[in-house]
Image 1 (cartoon, rainbow, N blue to C red):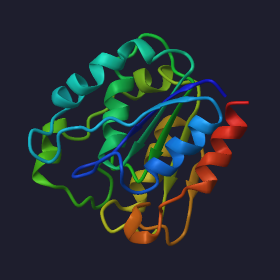
Image 2 (tube, rainbow, N blue to C red; image 1 turned 135 degrees about the horizontal axis):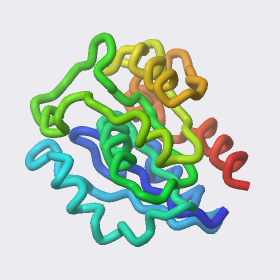
Image 3 (spheres, rainbow, N blue to C red; image 1 turned 90 degrees about the vertical axis):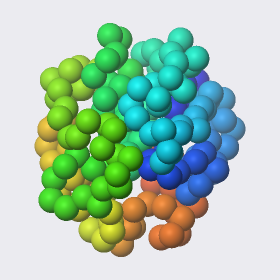
Length: 186
């Protein structure tokens, strides 16, 4: 598994939280390159600011790339996919808000210009998609995951009682995601 992986945190997040360090370690053991950038958040948070952080790594985004977005990191992934000219291998969305049902927004999230997505561009920008969502996410209603799956033409991976897939709900490891990545990237 020699793919380039990027893991994008959400609002107020950082690379050392939740399951990110564990997944990074597991993927590196398999020979992959893993980048978990620290984006400005919540102060200075915007799509442009996050792109500026990612810019030094643009040369690593190619047909062997996997993008994994958690929460607002999923919105960043969707917006990034809209800009790509070469399709990546896989995009993964975990607890991603797309503006369906209720979404607990924070003022800095508005800098990502709302929930307008170019679905046709996004679908062409990745060969595969995985979407995780739970029924008791306190920030993002389940309809977000259901409709994201519908827009991308894939099944939703539903995990009951997983909350927002963060450390508050015990997500310091994410075994199901690792297994799925291993199967897809063989």
